[in-house]
Length: 191
Ligand code: NI
Picture 1: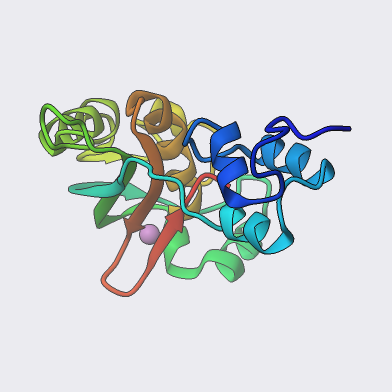
Picture 2: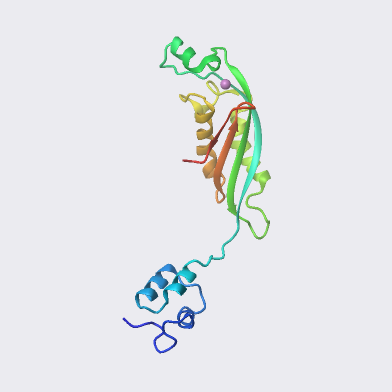
């Protein structure tokens, strides 16, 4: 098969640049050229390793706080099993936490605003969809999206993710951190 830049510097970098109109060739184009023996191996690997200019993507985070009560227990367990498994958190008369939620989203920087996502808007989204529904509430009794789910921090943060992920588009939700106590927190990245 002949080289597309036939008759002009075949096998040289000049020929390759000529053939691709000064644009960085795609992987497909490079593979084609290599098969046609137009590109010396050294140049091929050099071009393949050139970074492609791209928009900077930045992660921004908003912290929110709320207070809520819960009882961590499995209704399928006996009282003894719940006591053995969940200890103090199984207290039938509930107990509360001062939760801290950190919401991180990633996206391109908007040229007009310099923002990935206005953090005040991220706060508004998280407050309307999460905080207003859980603050000063009981996870076991008052929160519709936790119905039938054991309200551990792990289960809570997954439910938060399912609510927030579609709400922050076109930014991409990358991480939620839910702090239940000063020493205990969970992280979720959507996996
Ligand atoms: Ni607790």
